[in-house]
Length: 382
Image 1 (cartoon, rainbow, N blue to C red):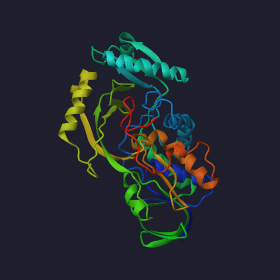
Image 2 (image 1 turned 120 degrees about the horizontal axis):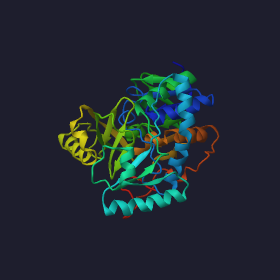
Image 3 (image 1 turned 180 degrees about the vertical axis):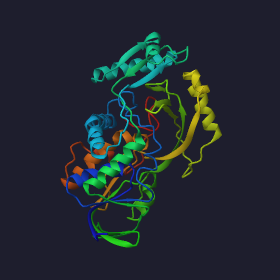
Image 4 (image 1 turned 30 degrees about the horizontal axis):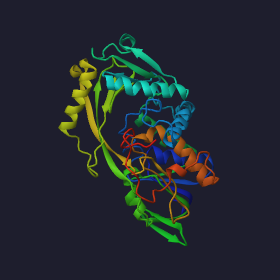
């Protein structure tokens, strides 16, 4: 192994891989360090929805970041598929936000009108129209808002293709190992120990997801990120074509007929147990929306740990007090949708010092933040 690197990226999920891939495209000698296998933690546990118009962020910096990232995806998917031959299963049927109650109708009318103002494709569907798209929906569904621009993909295959493309570009992937020590001098990282070897560095990027706090401690930094468990199940239900969403519940169809059902948000530390209580909740909610789901085969179930930040936004930018330490963590439920823009912006920050979008709204939190307002999401800022 070479004893120097321009950049060491710690963390091999889609955020870390996106950064490494972008840096290699700028001829940066880049090491990607992953304690397991790339893409096998939160990246593999997601549903793969690229939700912007149907998402919670209305018009602020988080919305702008998500929209910019979503716009990169079509060309980016083509690039990865051409490089690797992996079908990422990019699907364009869109998201159906179901309307079942008066409250749903009021909420989605506001969102529908806002998204039309912002230039998103959106359709207000009657009960008959939505059933023409998805005939298996429950009788009490009054209608839906259809967001055809919110596509979805196979997040596991995305992570696999991204890691393979990064290697093709020249990234050195060091899997099954960790950065376990660091040397600093005059406010800069000079070396990191990867496994048993010391490597001189120009820049270090912490993209370690839910484990970013532990990695930050190596550099004398307390990164305020904690794990948020998300449980999910998969069933075989090839009759569904669109992503179906109602409240916090969603069903995401895959090309092979699997439907991913999720998800929960649980602050229980580094616990990835799947609980009977949550499985029962998923089954109940799913059969309420699609009654025939009760008869389909259960394929698998799992849990992942998403990196939750108290800012309710990702933390992106230079770390306080260490000039050449960069943070890219805290993406929580938005790691997949935000991966392309995160890779681009962090690469620009490192190589030119001038990212093409301001990272100021995503800076390191220096003081307690106010709680979310009554119309704000408890786990995603605007």
